[in-house]
Length: 270
Image 1 (cartoon, helix red, strand yellow):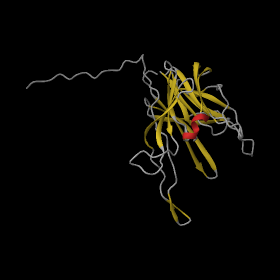
Image 2 (cartoon, one colour; image 1 turned 180 degrees about the vertical axis):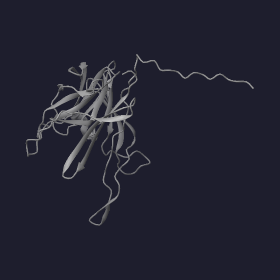
Image 3 (cartoon, one colour; image 1 turned 30 degrees about the horizontal axis):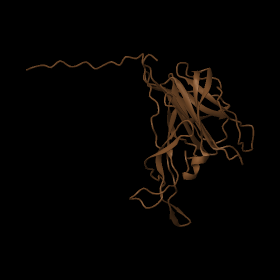
Image 4 (cartoon, one colour; image 1 turned 90 degrees about the vertical axis):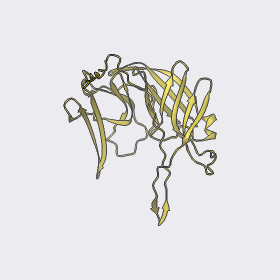
């Protein structure tokens, strides 16, 4: 607003025996940080967020600190951070109910609509595996409404590999409203090697989904194993650690802001 850019920073670290969370905002105009007040009953997942209309939207869950037992089912909702007022808004409803640790990823369309990907694997013996895409028909700091964009049944294609790697990170993605397709960038399963490789590896993959069961994986290249060698029981061991490719799925183009072009310097002839 008025060329006053701001940055929100979330920090989490462990100061034994407790986890410490810090929420701060930085203003470029004043070159200063200050602490933010966060709803005390909300666990904000800073990895699951997107910017729409200049505000940030976060996936959050109810923080039940009164129970000593491990809880597997908590209320989930959307929280908006308003950069103008520098405050969090009320809880906004999501079009699904996520189980704990289920991948939820955000994207946006032309900085006007929020899009959410939810990987629903059901519970216990449901044998459900769908990837749901929902898009907002209205979104403001205090209100939101949703429309179903696409639901992909993953069971028919799961035999070919571990599609949409089921990690808490989730994959970046974008949708094409005109073509009615969604493209997710993630990690594929251990598939047959592509020559000249001889051993099975994992691949960075673009998964293209559409209507009427259309589904096509497009290999982008070998995903490197980020695990570092370590010693376990005196033996060298390399853990398998893979990360999905990070793709910028949306762009913020401020149509009302005119960029100042640098003036050309006049040439002086001697």
